[in-house]
Image (tube, rainbow, N blue to C red):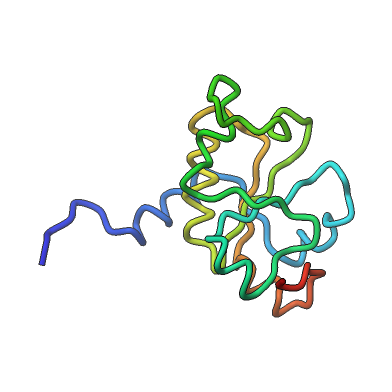
Length: 131
């Protein structure tokens, strides 16, 4: 077994200390507020299987930095909008790291959904059904 300097759990815990975190109960109250945009960073196969938060944009985790950066040929203009971007994944590990990365490159109007899509489903948040 390899001996790593830092575990993925430590990376996630450290990220959560540096970013804005929002619990699902509070996020549900913000869902209809058009100044917030939910960003689903899960793999497309997860979305096809279980749906996504109603109105969320899908941004593959592997493309996040490229879609945010206005100088990138892959830039998505919705990241220019005056919105708060609420990142989520299935549980909340990948999205914690994604939110930290977005902050590190300069997208500061962000939040991270604690508990992720699993918690959203548990609390019966509105979803777009899988196709």
